[in-house]
Amino acid sequence: MTTSAELFVKPGWQFLLSHPAHLLSFGFGSGLARKAPGTFGTLVAFPMYWYLAPRLPDWLFLFGLAGAFAIGVRVCGITGKALGVPDHGGIVWDEIVAFLLVLFFTPPGWDWALLAFALFRLFDIVKPQPIRYFDSNLHGGLGVMFDDLLAAGYTLLCLAVIKSILP
Image (cartoon, rainbow, N blue to C red; front, side):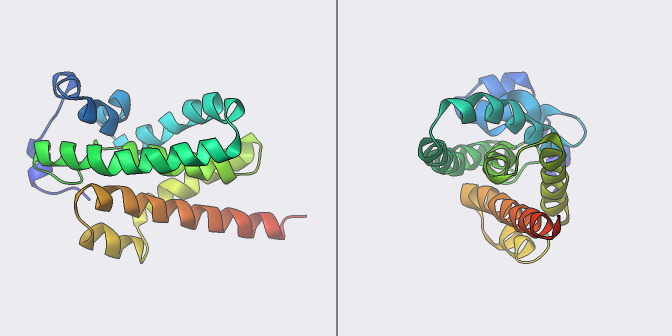
């Protein structure tokens, strides 16, 4: 959610490189995109998944995602506090971690990956209940991370329903 204060906060590479938390929470720079930083952040998950998933056993990949979520709570909180905007649009680590989870459970194939991407972005942008509730009422780094986890859950539920009705 964009606030009026966010319109005046324009972090750049200098800000990102000033603290490791900022670089990570801004998705290694993808959150600096002028338009749709959340979409660009989500796209970062694709190469990360393609590199990590074949190299890690499933249990280690999921354990790593849990760790990435926990780290995200901390780094997104640090960056939001530094910017004075708790859920600044450029903070995209939440999208990256949540979409990595989606990709892990998405059936193989480009068609499924693109559908997963579209659904995830839809739920992250529209924020149906209870995503909207938690986005508004859960604050700090946990609030930043948690609403995207719910968007991932909605995405996976839709993918499962679609897969179950296809021949």
